[in-house]
Amino acid sequence: MEIFRDKEKFYESILNFTASGVVVIDREFKVRFINNSVLKYLEMKREDAIGSCCRRIVPPELNCEEFCVTKKTFEDGEVHQDEATVNKPDGRDTFLVTASPLIANGEVVASIEVIKDITNRKNLEEVLRREIDDLSKWHRFTVGREIRMVELKKEIEHLKDTLKKFSEAHSG
Image 1 (cartoon, rainbow, N blue to C red):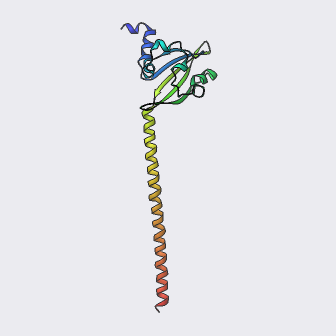
Image 2 (cartoon, one colour):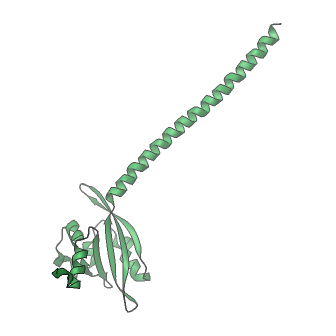
Image 3 (cartoon, helix red, strand yellow):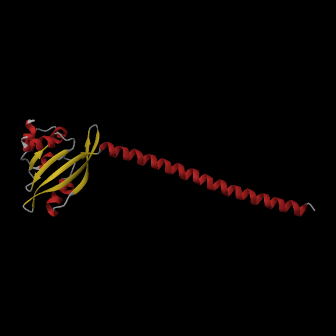
Protein backbone atom coordinates (compact mmCIF):
# COMPACT_ATOMS: atom_id res chain seq x y z
CA MET A 1 0.00 0.00 0.00
CA GLU A 2 1.18 3.49 -0.86
CA ILE A 3 0.60 4.99 2.60
CA PHE A 4 3.16 2.64 4.18
CA ARG A 5 5.91 3.88 1.84
CA ASP A 6 5.68 7.52 2.92
CA LYS A 7 6.44 7.37 6.64
CA GLU A 8 5.50 11.00 7.30
CA LYS A 9 2.05 10.57 5.75
CA PHE A 10 1.68 7.23 7.50
CA TYR A 11 2.35 8.65 10.97
CA GLU A 12 0.29 11.77 10.28
CA SER A 13 -2.60 9.54 9.23
CA ILE A 14 -2.32 7.54 12.46
CA LEU A 15 -2.34 10.71 14.55
CA ASN A 16 -5.14 12.32 12.57
CA PHE A 17 -7.54 9.44 12.88
CA THR A 18 -6.96 8.42 16.48
CA ALA A 19 -9.94 9.01 18.78
CA SER A 20 -7.90 10.99 21.30
CA GLY A 21 -6.98 14.55 20.57
CA VAL A 22 -3.35 15.28 19.72
CA VAL A 23 -1.79 18.75 19.61
CA VAL A 24 1.91 19.59 19.21
CA ILE A 25 2.91 22.97 20.64
CA ASP A 26 6.35 24.55 20.19
CA ARG A 27 8.34 26.61 22.73
CA GLU A 28 6.66 29.81 21.49
CA PHE A 29 3.28 28.21 22.31
CA LYS A 30 2.40 27.95 18.62
CA VAL A 31 0.34 25.02 17.38
CA ARG A 32 2.48 22.90 15.05
CA PHE A 33 0.11 19.94 14.67
CA ILE A 34 -3.51 19.37 15.56
CA ASN A 35 -5.44 16.22 14.75
CA ASN A 36 -8.95 15.73 13.40
CA SER A 37 -10.46 14.89 16.81
CA VAL A 38 -9.52 18.28 18.26
CA LEU A 39 -10.51 20.15 15.12
CA LYS A 40 -13.92 18.47 15.11
CA TYR A 41 -14.53 19.22 18.80
CA LEU A 42 -13.48 22.86 18.40
CA GLU A 43 -15.32 23.17 15.08
CA MET A 44 -12.16 24.67 13.64
CA LYS A 45 -10.24 24.37 10.38
CA ARG A 46 -6.67 23.09 10.44
CA GLU A 47 -5.33 26.16 8.63
CA ASP A 48 -6.86 28.41 11.33
CA ALA A 49 -5.14 26.46 14.11
CA ILE A 50 -1.68 25.69 12.72
CA GLY A 51 0.77 28.45 13.59
CA SER A 52 -1.64 30.19 15.96
CA CYS A 53 -1.06 30.63 19.67
CA CYS A 54 -2.35 27.61 21.57
CA ARG A 55 -4.51 29.90 23.70
CA ARG A 56 -6.62 30.43 20.60
CA ILE A 57 -7.73 26.80 20.62
CA VAL A 58 -8.30 26.55 24.38
CA PRO A 59 -11.96 26.99 25.41
CA PRO A 60 -12.34 30.38 27.14
CA GLU A 61 -13.44 28.98 30.52
CA LEU A 62 -10.09 27.23 30.94
CA ASN A 63 -7.59 29.58 32.51
CA CYS A 64 -4.37 28.97 30.58
CA GLU A 65 -2.21 30.40 33.34
CA GLU A 66 -3.53 27.93 35.90
CA PHE A 67 -4.19 24.93 33.71
CA CYS A 68 -1.36 24.81 31.14
CA VAL A 69 0.26 21.38 31.33
CA THR A 70 2.46 22.29 28.35
CA LYS A 71 3.96 25.24 30.25
CA LYS A 72 4.83 22.89 33.10
CA THR A 73 6.41 20.43 30.65
CA PHE A 74 8.53 23.23 29.15
CA GLU A 75 9.62 24.29 32.65
CA ASP A 76 10.86 20.90 33.86
CA GLY A 77 10.91 18.54 30.86
CA GLU A 78 8.54 16.13 32.62
CA VAL A 79 5.18 14.65 31.68
CA HIS A 80 2.26 16.53 33.24
CA GLN A 81 -1.40 15.65 33.40
CA ASP A 82 -4.56 17.45 34.47
CA GLU A 83 -8.31 17.32 34.02
CA ALA A 84 -10.10 20.06 32.14
CA THR A 85 -13.85 20.62 32.26
CA VAL A 86 -15.56 22.53 29.49
CA ASN A 87 -19.07 23.85 30.07
CA LYS A 88 -21.33 23.62 27.05
CA PRO A 89 -24.98 24.50 26.53
CA ASP A 90 -25.86 20.79 26.56
CA GLY A 91 -23.74 19.87 29.57
CA ARG A 92 -20.13 19.50 30.60
CA ASP A 93 -17.28 17.69 28.91
CA THR A 94 -14.27 16.53 30.91
CA PHE A 95 -10.91 15.75 29.38
CA LEU A 96 -7.69 14.27 30.67
CA VAL A 97 -4.88 16.31 29.13
CA THR A 98 -1.37 14.86 29.17
CA ALA A 99 1.62 16.91 28.00
CA SER A 100 4.79 15.03 27.12
CA PRO A 101 8.07 16.61 26.10
CA LEU A 102 9.33 16.26 22.52
CA ILE A 103 13.09 16.23 22.91
CA ALA A 104 15.65 16.97 20.20
CA ASN A 105 19.39 17.24 20.85
CA GLY A 106 18.76 16.97 24.59
CA GLU A 107 16.35 19.93 24.68
CA VAL A 108 12.59 20.12 24.98
CA VAL A 109 11.56 21.62 21.63
CA ALA A 110 7.83 21.02 21.84
CA SER A 111 5.05 19.53 23.91
CA ILE A 112 2.78 16.76 22.69
CA GLU A 113 -0.62 17.06 24.29
CA VAL A 114 -2.85 14.00 24.22
CA ILE A 115 -6.44 14.82 25.09
CA LYS A 116 -8.74 12.00 26.19
CA ASP A 117 -12.47 12.52 26.65
CA ILE A 118 -13.31 11.16 30.11
CA THR A 119 -16.79 12.66 30.36
CA ASN A 120 -18.53 9.28 30.59
CA ARG A 121 -16.09 8.06 33.22
CA LYS A 122 -16.60 11.21 35.31
CA ASN A 123 -20.38 10.88 35.01
CA LEU A 124 -20.21 7.25 36.11
CA GLU A 125 -17.94 8.21 39.02
CA GLU A 126 -20.54 10.75 40.13
CA VAL A 127 -23.35 8.18 39.91
CA LEU A 128 -21.22 5.73 41.88
CA ARG A 129 -20.37 8.40 44.47
CA ARG A 130 -24.09 9.16 44.98
CA GLU A 131 -24.91 5.46 45.29
CA ILE A 132 -22.14 4.98 47.85
CA ASP A 133 -23.48 7.97 49.81
CA ASP A 134 -26.98 6.45 49.74
CA LEU A 135 -25.65 3.08 50.87
CA SER A 136 -23.66 4.75 53.65
CA LYS A 137 -26.78 6.54 54.88
CA TRP A 138 -28.75 3.28 54.77
CA HIS A 139 -25.94 1.47 56.57
CA ARG A 140 -25.81 4.12 59.31
CA PHE A 141 -29.60 3.94 59.65
CA THR A 142 -29.76 0.15 59.82
CA VAL A 143 -26.71 -0.23 62.05
CA GLY A 144 -28.04 2.52 64.30
CA ARG A 145 -31.37 0.73 64.41
CA GLU A 146 -29.71 -2.58 65.24
CA ILE A 147 -27.64 -1.00 68.00
CA ARG A 148 -30.80 0.55 69.46
CA MET A 149 -32.56 -2.85 69.25
CA VAL A 150 -29.72 -4.49 71.22
CA GLU A 151 -29.94 -1.70 73.81
CA LEU A 152 -33.71 -2.17 74.07
CA LYS A 153 -33.31 -5.95 74.47
CA LYS A 154 -30.81 -5.36 77.29
CA GLU A 155 -33.18 -2.89 78.89
CA ILE A 156 -36.09 -5.38 78.62
CA GLU A 157 -33.95 -8.12 80.18
CA HIS A 158 -32.96 -5.74 82.97
CA LEU A 159 -36.63 -4.83 83.57
CA LYS A 160 -37.58 -8.54 83.57
CA ASP A 161 -34.87 -9.23 86.16
CA THR A 162 -36.01 -6.26 88.25
CA LEU A 163 -39.67 -7.39 88.02
CA LYS A 164 -38.71 -10.96 88.94
CA LYS A 165 -36.72 -9.75 91.96
CA PHE A 166 -39.59 -7.44 92.94
CA SER A 167 -42.14 -10.26 92.58
CA GLU A 168 -39.98 -12.65 94.62
CA ALA A 169 -39.45 -10.04 97.32
CA HIS A 170 -43.18 -9.31 97.67
CA SER A 171 -44.65 -12.74 97.21
CA GLY A 172 -43.47 -14.23 100.19
